[in-house]
Image (tube, rainbow, N blue to C red):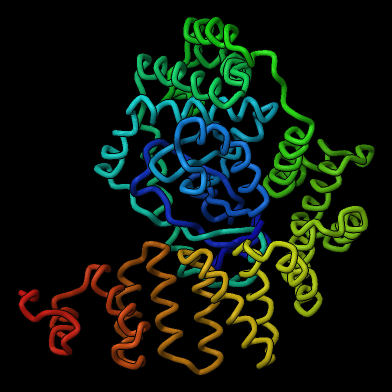
Length: 478
């Protein structure tokens, strides 16, 4: 996991890695990935990016999406760090709260919830997305991951910009479903699970595990069960239907269970390190337990102890890109920048199509105060952006790299892109206008800066200036 730009450094719960495009068009609510503590302080939530966890969630979601006639590659996985149980499926997005992942006992339970949420879409309930827009939700996610966390310690201005949008999450709780809609989504979800060759047992078990929520007052319930009303009758009806389906007795494969255990161990290590040390005791020699302890020691500021555990794991799994990523992250965050290069480079070699790993490597190379490394770091960031163009952390780092090379126009354009992708349109417009003054007219970069201005609430003065330059038609300025 990696973390974003300008967030609190070592006293953070995670390292930095930026937030991603978020919720302007989301239909339901909420998702996962491990990020900074500042967001958690405001809303008890944080947006998380992690290549490994996203891959596991994609694997769990793929058969369900395919059974529902949805291309899995068209869906963006979002992860929200929160103790709440919640999930959402909306046009182009699907997300999970870390609380939901940690409370699910197996992949089938998580898949049951996914199928239920996709069932809402199949039943036409995603019209709520219009309501969501009307109540003022705005996209503000950076692309965040655990690997980049220490990089921008002290850059609090961007953190404030992000946090100012965090309160929008509270609005999600007011958007709820009726019991009738819940029943329809249950049935649609079971149909999807049946088509996918998956058991409906997990969905029944998950709801049954929280049957007690029915007797709680509204304010005491998990948000998921406030927006998705639960009842004993509904659970019993769901069970009777699920038991008639041919795959009711089907169980998760050991491979799927191991992925689930690894995902939970990683989250516990990052989010709840003290608890992870107890839950994954030294007597537990399984891979997930040692992984969790390594991450927990890292979070508890014991890097040498964490690195010893990671090195031992690497002797067993030398081709595991996520272990190399974690090792590089720890070394970088604790000031051992040159040592971080080799493991981060190895992680990229093993997973060349993972943009977050390239961002980590690019950050390290830029931090080395070496012209050759700087050039390579800029190129790594540009390659990451060809894979994930809205990665705000990569844009911020690229701005730093251009600035060090004395390329003022490119640095200002990259800063404009950074602000554009975190939702700070005012600053995006300001830096795009400055970039235009430094860039060669009519180049792709100059035109991109103009586009950012035009899509970032330009002032009348900006529009007049653009019109005078012929960048836009003068008749459009009034």
